[in-house]
Picture 1: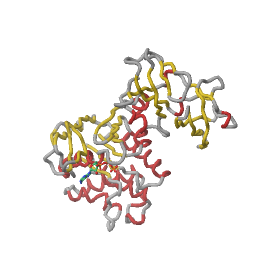
Picture 2: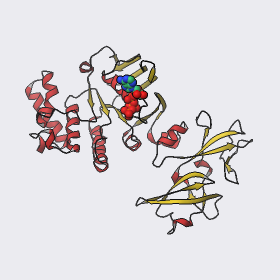
Picture 3: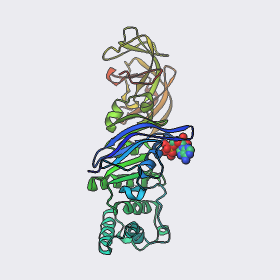
Picture 4: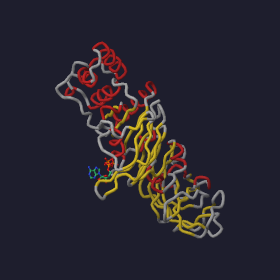
Length: 355
Ligand code: ATP
């Protein structure tokens, strides 16, 4: 069993806290993505698992065995870095074989594993080339190949796609997903890109300022963000957040700048207080009989969908409309409706989800 368990894992650099005590269990064969903005502590967490950084507190267990005191080499993990970290003077074949050679693996077994990885990653025709004669995407595939030939218990990925252009990033993302489907190796993957997180993760861990904000299946985190931070981080464009007030009865929200309160599907406790109202850009429906006035500033066509940026009662608001709901003239979108079930409510102060 190759589970990865973190128990109260924490890291301080002098006075500054990079990671508050964090618990996480990655199941055998599971693909977990750590996502969050720059500086949230995700790389520090990954580097501690890899053994490249020592924890200030807590434990790391791989397959149930505590590995805190083990050298990176002895942890039975393989890490793929953003900058590929290939040996420039070695051919692709030698790059793939090198780590195995260091471990004094039998020559025939090395050849078998290199051939297997090259086949799996489509690297056969590049085996005799040096890294400098490869494209960025091919180099990243070699870096992945070097990790998989080790047949480790756990894969660690540190922003592996960030040096690739958008098109290649999407292609390699699919390759990584396919690779995981074939190998089912326990994986911890770090990115700041929420699209990568949503598409790759079986479970996503959203981090902010050294803390875990939410852990869950991507669709669950998207549908029910636990905090305003998660709501504003996942989704492109992210959820619209409005200053609002919960009515005394707790059954509707009054949005600053709007006349009519928006009814909630069920009453929320402790009415008459400041809240943040969240509405996804795709939840709005253009509706001449709608109660929400919209003032368009800018139209952004994306092909199958169009983004309309504007104001809702004086507060910034973005709509995402599909071709069949967008009128020929976008300026005709002046009134909107939204179903009560699409309203997300957060405490204005703590940011915690209320409904
Ligand atoms: P990025 O995506 O920019 O790499 P991150 O979420 O991976 O960000 P970390 O690199 O884990 O964030 O950094 C977390 C915090 O710890 C940051 O505030 C960072 O400045 C700090 N930090 C990281 N490494 C060190 C170090 N060696 N010495 C001091 N502070 C550090």
